Image (tube, rainbow, N blue to C red; front, top):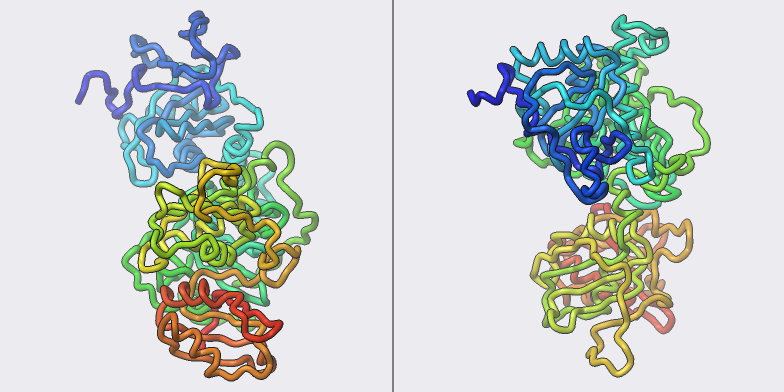
Length: 537
């Protein structure tokens, strides 16, 4: 082994790299060894700690390096949990490094000593543990670091509760009574849904607090719910304490979180309803709530409990699910961090430049938000910029339309660096490639609380039709849609012939039919409304 490494596989000095923009400072923005170098910029330079100091000087602060890319604060806290109470944790994710501060030097020494003989791992990746050159951590508390500080604090508080519950001191009665110290499965209810929450959104949001093993989503009592299983109780508690009562998107999609009575989830399929991240080989067959409940109940001892529903654990009385308080509120949560702080402008690429028009893009992207402007790039017509009304609508379009096949080509949808789509200057050649739709009467979401907000679904072969003239015959509709693909099935709504479902031969054909037939004039004063449906015929 390299002489610079300790017996534990740790290395001193040269690997302990830090950036000023994360949060370790001594008041000057520099490491103690470099505080006298006033010519080093506090915001732009990276500090490399003393490369010659290879002594094992004990410290309350532990330096951990060679961490996996998906590491979270809870992973670092778990690594230190067996050795004593921790006061601060700092994750430098871009450098795959972290710092962990204990309440006393003895606990830190025990941790370093232990990992000299036992290899340390985080999420199955070997990492290296050593004393830090820092004697304590000074954490920046400005707004730009608010979200990271909040997740770190949640992880520390969860660890503290576990330590107390296991006899480490403090008042652990309530914690032990609720059995939280062993709970890894959370039950999540999403209230006040304005924008759809997908399984991938949940995974992105909750995995910030630790390793998510399994997710099952379902609708019960007309509410969207999910069961989320973490790898450990600390991550579960940190996620619950941080996210309970918070809005995913601004003013809507409120999370209500409690512990589930299930101790383990039995996932049979990996699809958009359920996923076992530990078993990627699972099939994608259709999974139903009933079968999932039955399998989970039988597997975990609920089968013989008459009248007991493991999904119906009582939720505490809750009120005022407002935005997250303080600076943390500006960041929001998970993917919506990008949605709230990001641009409402999308860059769409790999379009069919012979077929694409601003109106077609307005119709397709208008399924997921109100499109204000569309610009097909003059010198690169297979690319377009689309400005949505809000960043959250842009995020929805990315979620549902990225990698969808349109005009026979798989389009890519990403957030643009631009914050607005500029209209061409007067006299500038444009060839009709840029259009403004701000005042269009065809916006689906301009009325707050519109039913359209509750019926947003990914592209599907089944389309929902509405605003059909009352005397219209089935053949009149199917013949028009047949111009854009094979019509497999059609059904009027029994109690309302103004609405119908039509099934195309594929999702690709349904996308083309929606673009062509939405707002199609069916009568003198009647224009057809077309959207994707989650129903089957």
